[in-house]
Length: 201
Image 1 (spheres, rainbow, N blue to C red):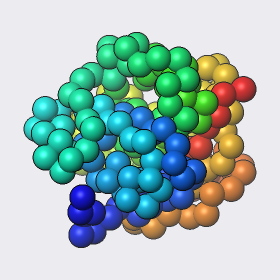
Image 2: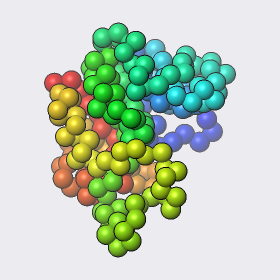
Image 3: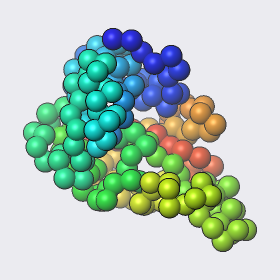
């Protein structure tokens, strides 16, 4: 199995949080790039779930165990504690029921890693204030973002679902900072994108 020529920095950062040889479920796995990295470098027992049949087909063609399905409705088929780590990379804001999806991931795995765009980032706040338009693509309805949440929104949701933040890292221009126990209020203001490592309380 060959790895993509150019690996995303956030994929490498997420992989750094995954122990070797564990069972991993990647929800919204796309073409399987992260799964391929984890299998190659961490020898994990990996599975993927992807909404797009086209992307799931690409992952399958690469020899990855990926099924086509909708995380909003299909996670209930996975058993309790069936995995050690569940990953939701740049997908939660496009879910119809993000709270339900996070709750299911916490049931499926004791460790959950989530990455997303932070709409609390100061540049987005300033853009909205100055222009009166949603920040991001100029064609806002093509962004595929149903829930433009801030980091604080996501952390508050995790708290209600009894998921603790173990560590977090910020992403700027494709570069990932160090994972640390960051001040959420500060990160909510300064982070363009965020990776959260969560665990069940």
